[in-house]
Structures are given as structure tokens and as C-alpha cells.
Image: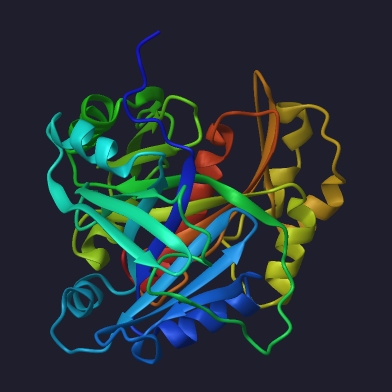
Length: 364
């Protein structure tokens, strides 16, 4: 077995650049059950930005907004709208991670830097990936603070209840036509990832549009990145719509795991989250396709949760509508009951659902 030159312990955090971090933080707290744990901004000595750190179990989201009209953050938001800037990876050695990847061809975004406060020190370094997205390597073994140096603990007065979101299952990137294999090659060569699975336009297509997708994963399987590109179709695919509105490649969706999808999705719906709709006839012969499941099919149908099975078991999944006005970033909620796959059997129903939304927006 080849040596894993880039050992990763998991996702450290995901940072989004947004137009209004204070209000976005309220959305993620009240709709998705994240707890505010830390803050950086003018009150903590940071003059150019405000950042809110939200946590639920192993998931950390950072929402950052610019306080200046012409900063990198402001330009990112102007170009892309609210979107993911940083997919941060938790490592034991951020310097080694940086040198291993840059020596294999990664473009540096930030050289290794040590930051300190009364809780200890953190080493961070970053490399560029597709579009304006970066991977930051975070080494925090000598740190005991709430998040990172420069952030102060912060709580909200509101009563926030977790909805059972556990960890980041996978993060999906959309890239331009013809670029998918290039980025898969980047993850294989530069980061030592393995190609896990390939979907072509026969797997993921409808009468009107199609996409191609390949999934790469790191050595221990904690990090999985599907990479999508558009495929030829009669009409504009969801990937092209994303690229048009995001103005380039970027993170399309974040899949978050739960142990009880019926509870999680019931709470999300109650709190106002909108989901893609799959027609009732999807459920008519679903058990013939996926076999026995432990959940009550009536409950799954009521909540519009999709089901799929692979050789290892089954999974339950559902996709939100975009969580900002541009049809770009959305979330997937997934419960795995043994299944290691990504819901291939649901692709057609999902695509048709997305196309209905595209048609409403006039973008099909």
C-alpha cells in the first residue's frame, strides 16, 4: 500500500464569504441548529472583517464578511455571491502538508504561519484548488481555544436546539466542461487521493441535460470530494447554471451526515428550510428497487426523503434548495445505513426536480 504523504484527520472547518455574516449566522443557528461558539471582528481587534464561528457536533462553519469596500472578501462576494472560500483540513503537521503538496505542483495560497494567543498556538498553510476555493491545512495539537487565535468565545442569547447534524460527509465541486479530469488528477497527484467512483452522462441525465462526476477520497476515507462537470445535453444543465451564476468553479453542495434523517429533516422543514421536490410516484415501486429498510416509508414520503441501496447497505438523502438567492450553494442531508455510495439510483429523479426549479428561474 502506498504511503499516505498527506494524512488528514477530518474536515477542520468550512469558511464562507458572505454579504452579511451577522444575519447569515442567525439563519444557520435558527434553521440548522448550529451554535455560535466564537467571533472575530472590530471588538476583538480585527479591523477589516467580521467572522462568526458556528458548531454542531464535528461540523464547524465560519461565516466571514468584509468591513471594507475593496478587499479580497468583498470582491469574492461581489463576483460569486455568498459561497465557500475555504475547505479547511485538520492535519497533524501543517508545514509538512504544505511542502508535500506544493512540491507536487500545488499553487501556494498562504505560506505556513504560526498564530498564538493565551490558549496556545496554531499552524496554518493554504493551497489553491478549483476556482477561488482554497484548502487550508490546520494544525491545532498545541491549542485549547474555542477556534483559532484572534477569535473570542461568543454565545447567543437565543435558545438554539441541535437538529442532529454530525459531520461533513462530502463536499462537491462544480468545474467547467473539460476540467473534471484535470482536477481529479490534481487530487490524485498533489494530495495523494484515490479515485473512488465515476459517474458518466448515462448515469446522471434526463431528457434535457446531463453531467459527469468523479469522486476522489483521501487515504482514510474521511475526506470525499466529488467533482462535477457539465455534459452535452439539449438544454442547460444545473452545472452550467451554477457556473453562470457563481461566475466560475466552486463548491456546489455540502453533504452533512445525520443518524436520524426523519428527525433532522422534520426539524429543518419546521424551521423554514426549503427542499427540492420529488413527485409521489417516486415512492410507488421504491421498495422493489431498494429492498427492506428500517424506516416507515410513509414518514419518508411525507418528508420527501430519497432512498438508495448499494452492496454495503442503504442510504437516505435529501437536498435543500439553494440557501442564497443565486442558484449556487445548497446542502444535502444524508443518513448512511451501511451504504458507502452517493445515491446513484436517485440521480434521475433529482435532476428532474432541479430542472423544474431551473425552468421556474428561466435558466433551463
